[in-house]
Amino acid sequence: MLTSKKRVEFAVCVANKGCDDLEVWKVYQVLSDAKAAGVGCIRVIDESGEDYLYPANRFAAVDFPKSVRSRLTEMAARQREQGVKRPPRAGGGIGFAVRSRMD
Image 1 (cartoon, one colour):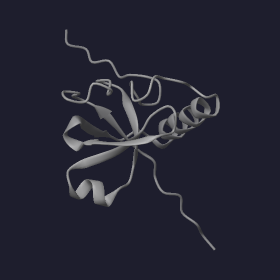
Image 2: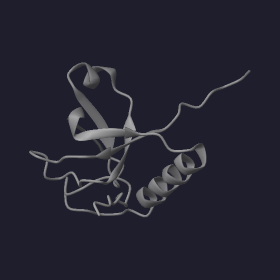
Image 3: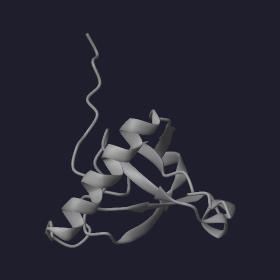
């Protein structure tokens, strides 16, 4: 019997107005949540493994190649296993930020 793994999704934070615990340009792992999407929200996971709801307009979906998605997922799992600690809701994502070049 074939089993299929659900594709892991990611989004980059593009705005944090009113959500100071989000870091702009940081990549977050996204959990599928139809109910949240129905009210204009997105559910993301922080380094601790906790998931939180935020307005979806604070994020842009990113599509990485399979090899990159795998590495990001592994890195996030390692961080959670090692017990990466942050102050409650003081940032999230999987430990790196995408920097934009404006020059």
